[in-house]
Length: 328
Image 1 (cartoon, one colour):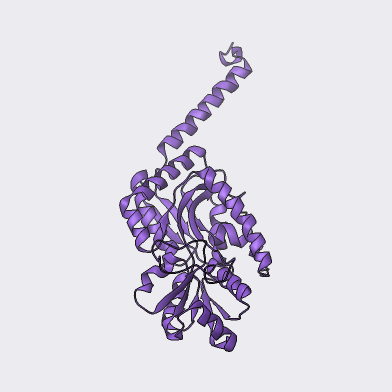
Image 2 (cartoon, one colour):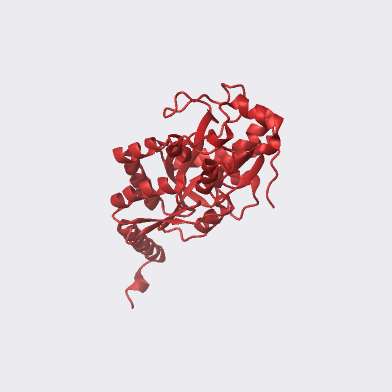
């Protein structure tokens, strides 16, 4: 009689489960065996791209495999988000998510991805306040002067954004709502080209992240008038918040985090989180972020998951109050 026939079925099933668990554990222990792709949902050269490359280099060193940054701009980050959400959940494709992809988009777009259901949070990476800046060619030195100019001649002012539904767009619309002014919206495919035209005076106003704007403030081509946040920034202690200047409820703190496709193994997520937090503790990374107006902000996957759920709910409320129509 064959030996296997004398072994109870439940014992065979237990052995099979052990073998599968052992194979899975071995695969996890071997991960990563090849480079990891970090998808950035904006164009090269912007703040998001810079953050990803700085952190990706250090994460690669910690993991023993390169982290390769790939830019997939478009649809306010929805193209990249959908791509990653549909990727194999093996830890080799991750993304930099931010306030648009996992906060504002669900309130403004009919998405083919769910920012909560379709992603496994890895960890928070950084935060940076939103600035109100004006081109030096506009000759506007204060928020009051900006409001007065808009009321006197609305057609003389246009504002640049990184695209419909991005933080610079929503911040500007909230500012218009709170002040009762009008400005022409000029959307770009990312913060970098939007900032380029603001520097050149093609557009006069922008609400970029401090991270995107900080390197350009010293040039004198743009001037920071106020912060669209709850408190002043360490990097710009002399710049007041809009609330201090009598314009309340325009708070758009920008944040950046890493996500994997839903279903990614918990052990792999834990290793990615550990590598991310190792990178964020690196003095060189901390200094690089601070030089450009961002602060490293580490945490656990669970903390990021709770934060994203709160952001989705918050932006649905804010977009409704600002009467911004959802894209079809």
